[in-house]
Image 1 (cartoon, helix red, strand yellow):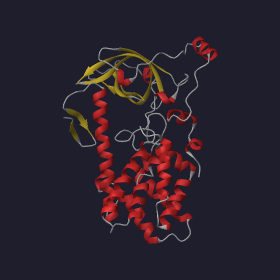
Image 2 (spheres, one colour):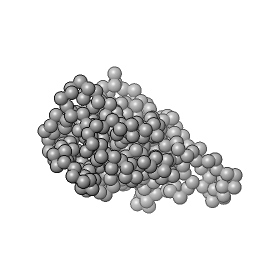
Image 3 (cartoon, helix red, strand yellow):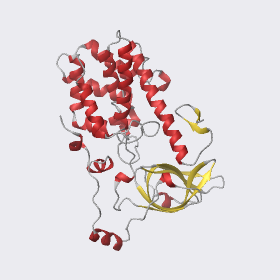
Image 4 (cartoon, one colour):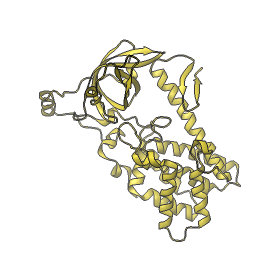
Length: 355
């Protein structure tokens, strides 16, 4: 079976710590200086302080043009590096200025950090597209606190625990696909809500698997292998829904179809490659993927109708929401928001009490 280091694109290998970028040579630095592209010492997002003047290169997570009440235009954006994100405004912006911002790209800016409603934001005075400059993606991509190779080994060890030959064969086929495997291991679990970092998808799934195993141990009447298959595959569609590149944006396919449908289709394609995969088992696995959001209003085309599907919905939802809440608390703390309540958080459809 292919290993992670063989599957990672070079820039993501660097971001995950597999191949640290070698120091820039003196001739390379001289060439960069001659072209006016010598890197500026950049302040990390987590180190921003109110009133601080900032100059450096940041990753554009998103950027849109808005109309102010006086009729002028301004840019509303989000910048990030691997230490955090910060909302951004650039006032009196023209279409030419907005062209310097590219979602998922890099921009060199000069601005000032301000405190607005108990949270940090950046006011940009000048911006210039920096996509052509020498940039190490590892400086801008958040990565799981768990080493990716360690989680990959845990995934492989988990696959060996299956006693049901059909489920094991299906999982082995899916995770032997080099493209699926690399995206599953390195990709985020979401664009922003929870586990939004390299390795976040695998981290979320392995965490949910631990909870699932505990539930199966307590309730032997559950089909353990079916439950674990559902946990491992419930978000598999995200390998096609999310772009793992800078910014963790949605692919066109992801926006058009969504990860639930994409996951069901991916599993169905693999089942069709297997000889005599039992129809009932196929239905049960597909049902778990389609129902794991738990309700029609949250995107599941069917409700969970089996014990394993009900268990999957609640345990994966708990893992996603708890991690999502913790991420918001950490992000607001880093931004200097020390109030007892968070700003509005979509993960709870309200404000989080931070204590």
